[in-house]
Image (cartoon, rainbow, N blue to C red; front, side, top):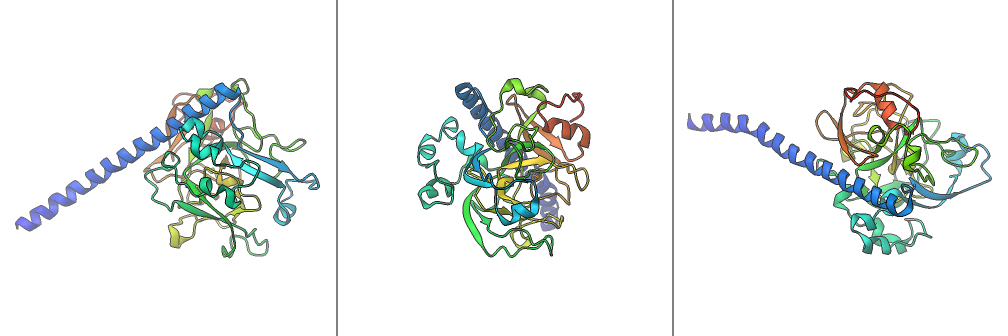
Length: 323
């Protein structure tokens, strides 16, 4: 009888303990994003622009950079590919790590192994117990068999993260941010140099950075690996994504769009694309806004304000009760 009573008490207490632990992990995730927000603004104070989504020269021979078939055969990015998370390392009190980077070389070079293999707790959500080092695939999609790829060829391994820069609405393509190409409407993209004056929607109504957990796909804070691809995480490694076509160019390991195709593409959608937003916090995900504030956006958010929050200057009106 006593054992039965103890078992009942444990069963009653266990959910409360688990909820308390998750509450602590969510609070730490919020603190991580606040630290990133402070670092972004300190970077802005110094450079008068926010850091680029990633830096890269481009191949001028690709005349139609958003032609996916051409992109599958030859990447438009020539490097070096270093991302916004690497650019703010000094503002994250990681100057020695920043100084270890040779920015003239891509992240794949052995000379940059110190950076590419160093785990950064400030870039990891404590609710996501994924690996500290993750692979970058060398396999482009197979047009004859969407959603399949061998995953056997790896172009690089990089330090895992959980936070991606907001690209804006629509799909990331090779022409994004290049002269004559598509001009993204978010804060971060290739060679971006966004100023506060350009965020005419208001910094308090514009997402800067959001969460993506490893059950959807792998994130890194380091760089866009040149010639690399991002595939959805396999079920063996805890993958839960049900959407078939993948992978994407691995600029999606550092950036995330709010997609306009294949459903609402809001937070934690069961058929999310590998580049979408996802967290292991119950009910939603944490997002850093451009003013440095952090908000928990629910999975039930309406697609209209969700898309509006992704853009910096589209002029949408967003009510305070919209998210």
